Length: 339
Image 1 (cartoon, rainbow, N blue to C red):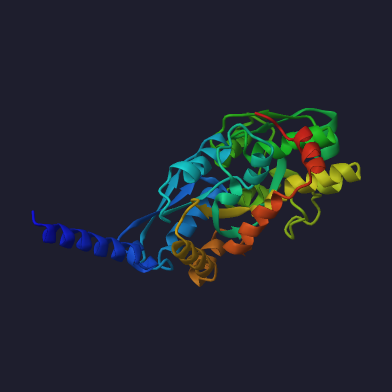
Image 2: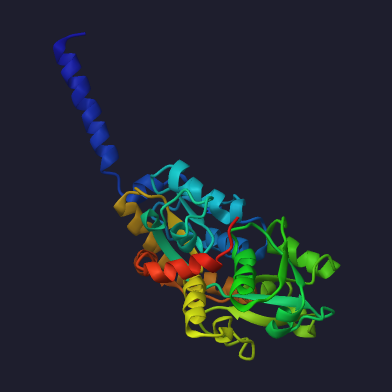
């Protein structure tokens, strides 16, 4: 091969590479698959929200890629988070949903954590996620005070899931006697266990109960005795928050720090290192989906709420969480359940 041919070959490859590097988001995403990875089993509010997002976001992403929702349950959603952080392609072709407590789990050194929450690129939040705890109508435990007096069995999922974390935190802070029966694959299976009488109750998102078991709320099949959020839900004005039940100011501070995870809620994030222009395109596509009447209509039909937060604000919320004082972190660590 002549020197001239080699030079032309190098120049041509550089030009092609230059074109590839200069691709717009629309050019990049056109004809591609885009994944939404769900860190939970099928069924339940997390799965429902994610699949609903998958149905609508594609038309708002430049280039209109094919959107595929894929469940990757395990380790309280950390299997999916670890995958996005370390294994998924860092090209903007995937986002994921994980446990809202993941930032706290990272700070506390949870052994299942192999990610840095602030290094993830947060795309947006559909809404805050307020968990509740409830017992079946036949259970003798119907209040937090009664839960301090006698044991109540609750169905649990992954160790890092809020379905397990929140009741165990109450045991350590308020002296309740909840016994977690672990191993259920998602809240739908865990709620079925309640219905079958395998356990007395469960802790999950209020949205999960309202979407999957609306009859329970209508006919009084369950007794909701506490909610895990910074303030009471409008739909549950007579149900106290865990924070309200704190015996002193230190306990209140600890519970507030832990329940702040509700603000992260149903939030989606991309890999570290995703190209800035594609991240911006995904954030704006997420915002457009939240404003899409068709998406809102689907949520309304499922009796599910929305309280969006932009990716940039969500990123700041996650980063700010790392500023928790060492003293408060030590108090949280003392009551936070360990695997």
